[in-house]
Length: 313
Image (cartoon, rainbow, N blue to C red; front, top):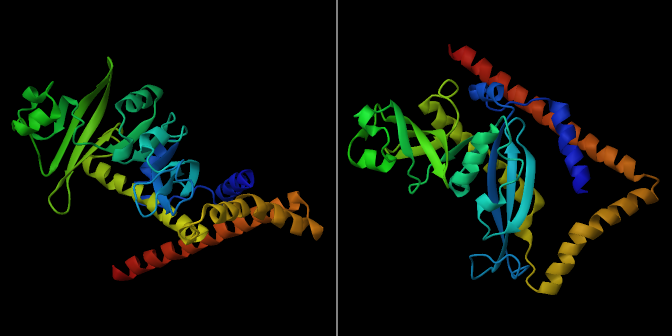
């Protein structure tokens, strides 16, 4: 069934083509082979698999974490995996992330200088929030007030605390050096003033010819699209409705869902003269019809917005 689901996802991609939900930053799709978001979501359980997947909740001691890599071309998963809740995100990042030519958005949980160095060497690109304790060395100041020449070679934190580097129009944009175990590489740090006056820091390898400092902050907002996917999956799959607490009951339920249901469905269809190949064809057909319907709905919404803009002018 997992293989059928993977083929269904591929069928959706073929049916709708390259759906670009963020036209305002379409240049990213021209610059990179794919734009992806890496993130994870947790689901708490009462007692199921508490030994394998302990949670941080005393009331519900078990929890698993689903890690996903989602392509922003069509908002469909590229890769995924399951781990216990306490597994660090960076340790469970899907292997397909940070592949050559791609751009991957990540949050603070994926900060790993060694992996960033590997990505740069492989020709992959990333955009991630900069951790407070991550203190790279400044190589060159592109946007920022203060003593630019003196800032070169200083740690970012020192340059800021000593007033050597200051915001210019609410923005800082500098080249920095990443280093770990004798390995070094150049990256870019951007700071942009948020709506409430707070300073937001980003670490990226995307060049200034592709994204300005302000566009870096705007592009990072696209990472939240993966949250919409998580919400849809949790609501659709009904994970929050798993109420059983006795191990035996939970085990029976999980076995029924993961093993018996596909077998029973296949048996029922075959008893009516439907082969497994025909069953898969029907699943793929439903996936394609659903995808085309979604695309048509988006197209109608786009035309409606264009019409409203035209009437307002």
